[in-house]
Image 1 (cartoon, helix red, strand yellow):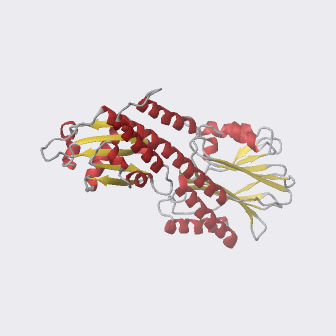
Image 2 (image 1 turned 45 degrees about the vertical axis):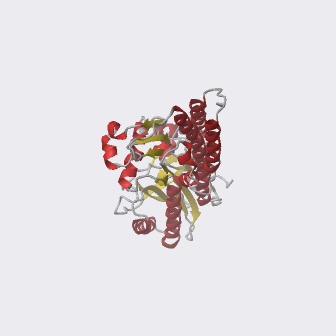
Image 3 (image 1 turned 180 degrees about the vertical axis):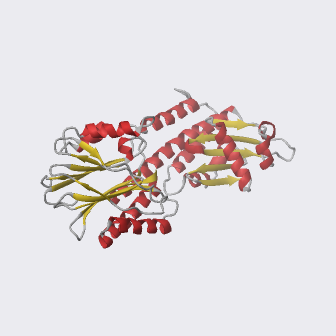
Length: 411
């Protein structure tokens, strides 16, 4: 993703300036370069939203001698100068530029070219805009003067708009990397720093963010309960970014509290379901919870919409746990009775998220078969190798793997 965005920025600059452009020796050129320099510097101020940064001093409007400018970026609209004040008119203009989808969009006669848009913004005659990723746009507008005419957009002004687009693409890239790092740090801070050490058992986990650089809502957990049992958890919140990571943290905390105080898988999940219903409406997550008796290997399992667990026998033979009896958390209104299973002496229990096994355009069964083959060396198979053999490196979903081995000394 980094290389792609850098290439987009470079491509935009090349379109604006040409591969080896030289300055035009005129006063207007130097004025434009000065305004662009101010805008480039303003766009790099990460203490404020991008739209605020480039409109607060008026440089955006002056760059192309527009009456006003509007910026839709980072989930907000900011404007400067004379622009329509009606929300519907602003949205119509922003969407029109975004829908065309070209790097630079212009019209000197909006009523003739887009009458449906002009009808919503009757005071606007000419429009120029630049498109940015995810339907973010910058739009300039001009209205007719007292004589009923409007100045035409010039080729130099289009070049200036394209040059500014290059700066904005770079700023969005830098801001995106900052947000990604912050979200990743948030998510990793919510995952357990250490897994419990249990005599006769080893518990290991791996977590990887999406290959596209997206941070999702996967989480895993393992803890000793007052009864002496081990709780093993893998969950997956729908979506990506800060919201998914924050929801994950709330669910993990609520589930921990339920497991420690109730010690019944069913009661703990019923408590979690009620908590999510009232505090996280609209959020959806799959979840697998296993409570294991470390002395006997006996376990009880409950799954809400989550992929089945895998049991690996000492000889490398494998068997799958039951399919989820209920839909995900946030959809189900019931909690079923737990299912019993046993981890054999010298065997292992494998929990994971769907990001480990799913690949676009293929059956989930193929992914599950890959996971089985990845454990062909038995329960002590190297987890990094398992992830590498199982996961699609291009996946846009994060991936989690949690393995509890019985009959192995703690690492």
